[in-house]
Image (cartoon, rainbow, N blue to C red; front, side, top):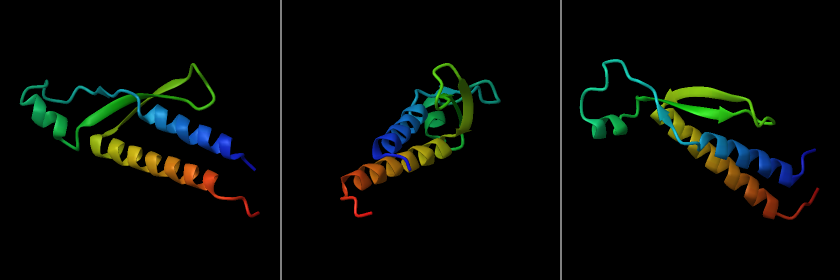
Length: 93
């Protein structure tokens, strides 16, 4: 069974990994158009470098739409909050 600290460390690591600064992928069409409108497009492709858990050197490139990244970050926040909340509850087991 994992300790609360181990679970929190894992959740925090995932949150940090997915919270890395995004690098925009080059969209087909050469980048013409309004840059402000491009930033708000939920279907634009965003690629981020994600560090593999358990390694300081393994980094992989993950590409998803901006909407998918936002959903991933929302789930990460919820998981972190749940883990923190569980760590505050008395252990009745």
